[in-house]
Length: 197
Length: 197
Image (cartoon, chains in turn yellow, purple):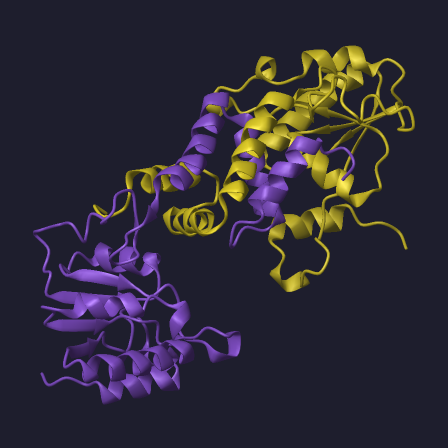
């Protein structure tokens, strides 16, 4: 649109790079910034730069962190004999929100995906091995996708060779869903994973 | 969540201030920035500041603009005998996208809303009047809400007193909708506004 100021169009283009943000949402976001005070825009711009300046990766678990090791790895109150393996840092957030896990994490940084050329060397698998000393249990919390399953299988072979106890988080019906709307695979997993009452 | 770095939490809080962006979307957006290159984040931060520094309001039509008067008001190729009255700058964008309007605009900056204490003096009505010299037609493209209708009525009385020709954009069935799903009011307006074939 010719009448849109260049700087506004630039911002809309930038904002629509966000995942899940289309042109229309980006436009609404840009107008929101336009309407608000300059300090608000400055605060947002600063917050964006700050995460790039302050946040790096924990050298142990590869979680995002402002310090190295991260707050979880360096927390003496957590259970250092359990490691939960997840795909990325957002999965850590999700599990932490439950408040029911007190062990450590290891972030793979992705899953094996031969079709996309992602092999074991592209993931943080090598440096998982030295962390296994003194570990009682490794919990797999990898997404139940095809590539996720492949990754779980690959890792379980590696870890079993090291004699580590492995478990995976349960698959089954999500809470609050109507059984009739569950897909066949989920229902199959739910049946297979049935527990005694 | 205790394990979330402060700077990341700050950014998530900032992003979730955007209209239509919840905690979860803000989180996904923040992680997107984390994963991308620093230059990308800098470009976005700069774009945010830039609109505050560069964009102001056209003193004639109150549209957003990098120059005053704006590109529309100062465009000699446009039809300077027609003014379209809209609620805010996003409405200008929507109309410009159709590519079917070549006149000027006047942005009210809102609509009359006695319940919210918004009266004629809170809108850009006073400075619409001097713009009416040499105007053939004023088109109302104000949202068909209750407050919008009130505003149209108020303005039409003012403008008729000045002897200006007034029209309003058509109300009726939106394109692609099934008649059975249209609400009664829309259908009523569509019937009232029927045109001869």
